[in-house]
Image (cartoon, rainbow, N blue to C red; front, side, top):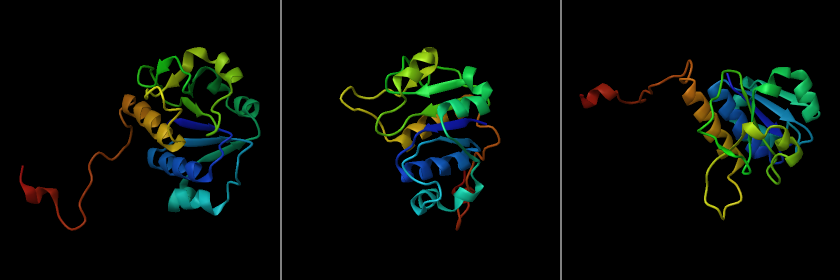
Amino acid sequence: MINIVLLEPEIPQNTGNIGRTCVATGSVLHLIEPMGFKIDEKSVKRAGLDYWSHLDVRKYISFQDFLEKNPDARNNIFMATTKGLNRYDEVKYTDNCYIMFGKESAGIPEGILMEYKDSCIRIPMKQDIRSLNLGNSVAIVLYESLRQLGFPQFQYHGELHDHAWSELGN
């Protein structure tokens, strides 16, 4: 299991989308206030579709509250930031690790990043681009962490609705 942590998310559709990704991957979503919306807003649930009721979502009033309630996160957290020194695919993720993402407009505050220098990770991109969409960033890093863990308990093959793959032969 991977823990996704959103620090002060601002856009409800992003959080809904990330919630849906967490359900699909068996990940826990941790939300740290203040948020730019209420968690029960229609736009959050609409983006999460009918998956929202299956989401393991936990809320905290501050980053300090999050750390107090998740003491194992102190030494097992990755900070996703455009300022990171390590590429997201070069670190080793462990089961039950935490991956934190900052708010859409400003990212994770530098004061927090300074405390976690060695676990700051970044997604490579062209120099003139400020950042990727938060939902896309979460999906990229989350799936890399799950790939490293061997996609535990995931379905590996899909089936067609009106046909069978075996109809095509080899």
